[in-house]
Length: 142
Image (spheres, rainbow, N blue to C red):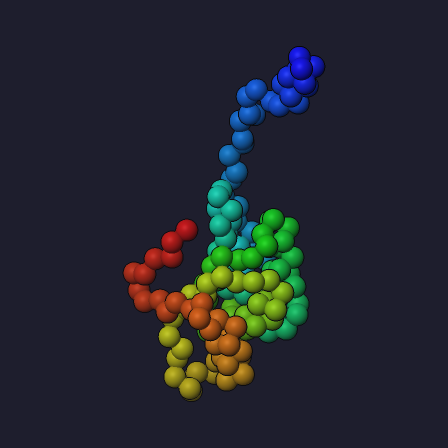
């Protein structure tokens, strides 16, 4: 019995080692034209600001950066504006890594040259049920 107690005590740390606080991480991802910025809080929550051009190149770069940061998903994706190099890969990105919530402002009218109908439809499909329209002064809780 004494051996069992000793074995249990020897295999169980008496005091847990203190955890090093994790830093706020900000990763700039080159999407050749626009930029994508991934922010990971010390608690592990993530915010991606913009997601680059349509196609695999930028979506692959962002997904790889997110996975290198230890993320299994992106908690928040913020689309800053509707130039194609800032939001074009939304659907391609969603095919590579889950995005929990999408934030954007209203789409401009149909005459806006950077809002291609196919990209808009793809964005609306992948963000369906996970979209928040923003207005000046709104906050994204992290």
